[in-house]
Length: 218
Image 1 (cartoon, rainbow, N blue to C red):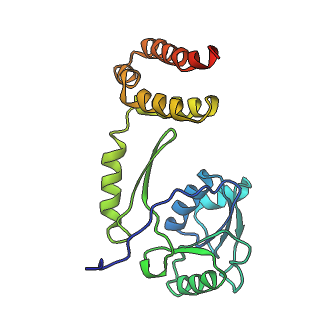
Image 2 (tube, rainbow, N blue to C red; image 1 turned 60 degrees about the vertical axis):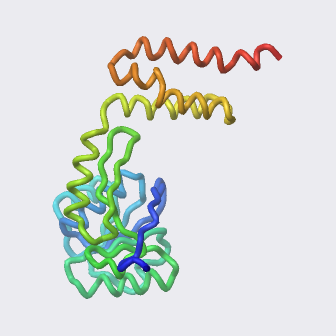
Image 3 (cartoon, rainbow, N blue to C red; image 1 turned 90 degrees about the horizontal axis):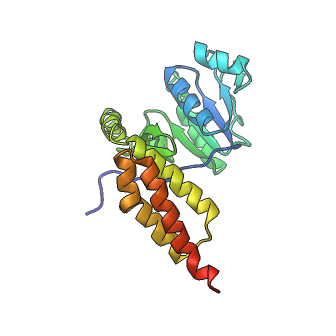
């Protein structure tokens, strides 16, 4: 039996340097703006009015604000479009024009006009916890996000950063894969969880020597 509503395909977009259009300047729009700016996007806001925070960000040059209503063709040239205008008649127009140009669009609180939904997000260093209910229950998503983010401890952040460092400095292959799995699931991860960082680094140095020894012998 098919689902009663569309099932989201979860992805994490990299918006660094990408152009994003946000139509709307209220509280919801402000939350959208802060999220995409954190991701490094180049943001333009189109709205006759804007919150104090959005105005300040525009003054600081962190976003471009066009203080006017949405106009046809405003979506052209953008990689992503977010509609969060207080006027309910604006969202359908934005969505129609964005879709006609093949641009992904999200319209706040109108799931049927969304090409993607925005999960409730929590961050701890490089770790992102994102909970989606496919637009059905945002309040539940926020509650679950708070509960799960609270379970991300300091040692998890250390493990994520350590894994990233190892990926950048070790050649790809089965040995690196085994080491990365062992770092998370083995003694190193357990030592970090107990706050024994020196012991964890000592164990890691031993593992790295073992990893290099076959190559040194050839």
